[in-house]
Every structure is written in C-alpha cells, then in structure tokens.
Image (cartoon, rainbow, N blue to C red; front, side):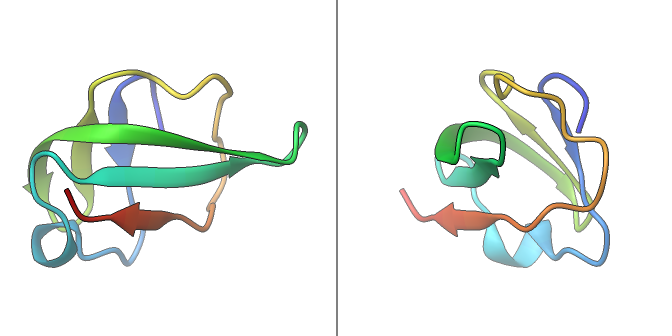
Length: 68
C-alpha cells in the first residue's frame, strides 16, 4: 500500500468492492482498526482510498471490507 493507492495480492477488488465501500486494516502497533473509504476500483488487485492509513503497510496484510 502506498499512500492512497492500495495494491492487493490474490484479491478480488473488482468483485467485492464498490466506490463508497470501506477498507478496514488493523494497525498492529496501536492494536486499533482503521477504516478508509474506497474512491476507485481499478482492477482485482488495485483500488484507491480517500485518505491514507496512518501507518505504512509494506507486507501482505489481512483486511476486511464494509459495504456502504
């Protein structure tokens, strides 16, 4: 994940996400979840979010999603 661009691995963003849905990722240092609104879905492995997460995600990370 880089800033507001999200790059997945073996994800199906085209099938599971729509604009307005939310990505949810856990900040493991703070033990808190952060939620960001999806503003574009480009492919099964790439989407955009309105605001960057407060931490860098540099390895495969589990995520959840919430429909709008």
